[in-house]
Image 1 (tube, rainbow, N blue to C red):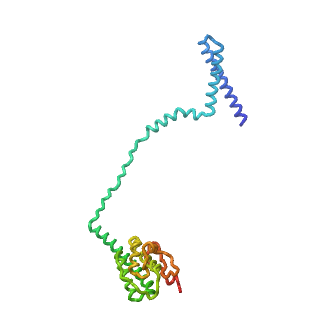
Image 2: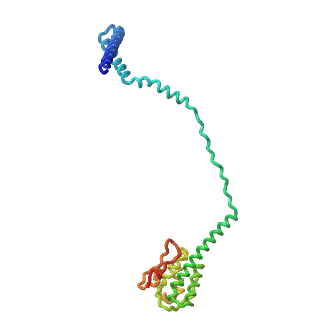
Image 3: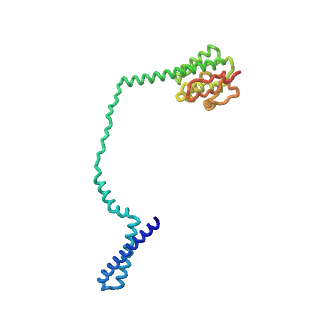
Length: 253
């Protein structure tokens, strides 16, 4: 089969070569007449015709499909573009949302709910603080004075400028630094943004004046100052919560 194909190819190339030579010769003679049968011109035309015709033939043999479709592709694309129908995009209309209307009663109800929640939160904080005062200060105060301190802290929770009645006796001596810790702990739970450092110092000095005699603001402003005998330690609140840690469990005797 390979030999037959080779023989067929040779036959084709021989036929084409003869045709190309004949055509080139005719063209050369025809053009040469215009130049008075100039041998130089006829030779150039003959060689040029051979090269051109062989180039066309080889191109047709190697890339027949591309050559045939070069002219038709442009026409086809043009027809396709012209044939494409113009489709209108559908208009998507958003549903009309009716405006929300709120009445005065709705506003008043929201305010009432917020105030109620705030009062409940404040009540929980105050109860936690008063329970802490009772557990912590019962060690240092007599029963009568302890309830005075509890009432003073309760009033302070409602009025940050409240001035308490002084307590001047202790059943067990306590230094000013543990008392600083005491007021810091309760003020953090009542609302640290509302109870400034000056308010805390003024309250604890008025409540327990004897341990704070001769001490000014510059000395007392560090309410978290460390103490060797820290009978009332600093009790950091967890993530702004109002509950206290159980001192008896953390420091078992």
